[in-house]
Length: 97
Image (cartoon, rainbow, N blue to C red; front, top):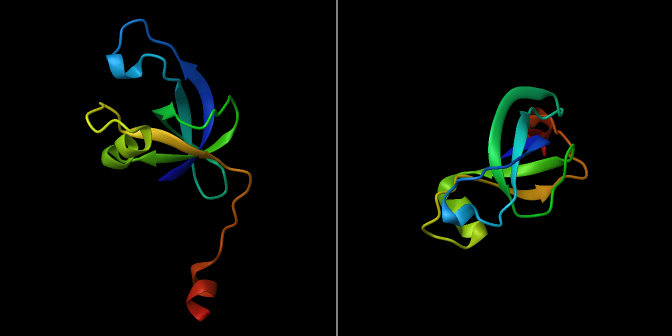
């Protein structure tokens, strides 16, 4: 999974039938401070995300197919959440607990 920011919509006139009626979004991967990395991915939207929103992306084929409920679908990445906030905890603080 990774954090990202939705940068645009993808429109295609010819695609696999699985993608009919599905919204595809262009997502810019971000680091833990929301700094864009410039590494883009196309993901199926399962939560109604929009342009500029911060999202959580599942980027693993089997898990993505489980989310969309289609075990044979040609899908790898799916948006599984819209992120309201994220807190970064220092790993040294976690180990001390």
